Image (cartoon, rainbow, N blue to C red; front, top):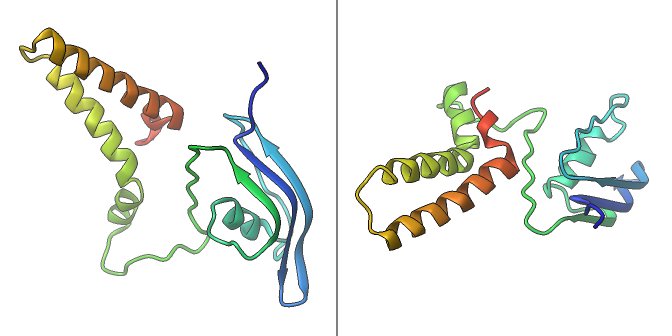
Amino acid sequence: MSQQYIMTIEELTRLYDEKEVLHNIWLSFYPGAKIGVLGDNGSGKSTLLRIMAGEDRDYMGTVRPAKGIRIGYFPQEPRLNDEQTVDEAVEEAVADSRAILDRYNELNMKLGEDLSPEEMEKVLDEQTRVQDQIDHANLWELDR
């Protein structure tokens, strides 16, 4: 069985007024791919990343993430709350990921309790699902 792409981009073109920033871009990525986007200032690097993250929808062409794929995007100039510290802003940004790790830890603690066989099976099933989410998103590296 061949691998499926996690992102496919076909014939992507993006205009700002009359200026064509991206022209007929074709890209595909396999799971686990590491990508870099290089170019001069104003060449469309940030625009491409915003389009891939679903933040910019004003383009021509097709951008198709695989089903179930979640794309995070941290902008070059983030919109920060002046009342938050940097740590608070980062924690807010990773809150969903942190909740998954917290749930995994809760389930591990629950395994130490006196559970019926049925309860134990439910906890183990959920633990497996949560661990798959963690592995898929590489959340073990969240605090690095």
